[in-house]
Image 1: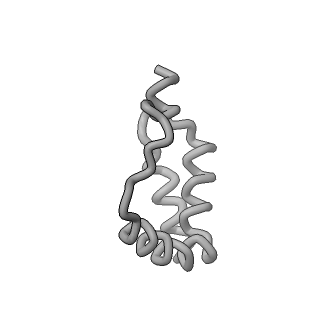
Image 2: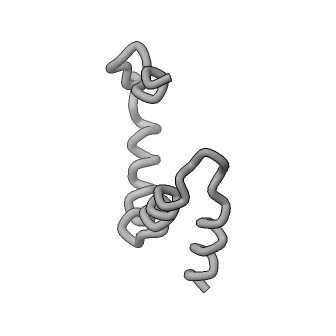
Length: 64
């Protein structure tokens, strides 16, 4: 069943996103260790008093 869900998610790659990169991202997000860490990371982000502001623009915006 998990493999079916992974195949369905992999097929949902949006236009402009490389299918191999999307498949790697899906594998990463469905990884057992990632699933264990996600709630901890979410809780840690809630506790941050000041948002990270290391740059004026994100790297993604600079590439445009």
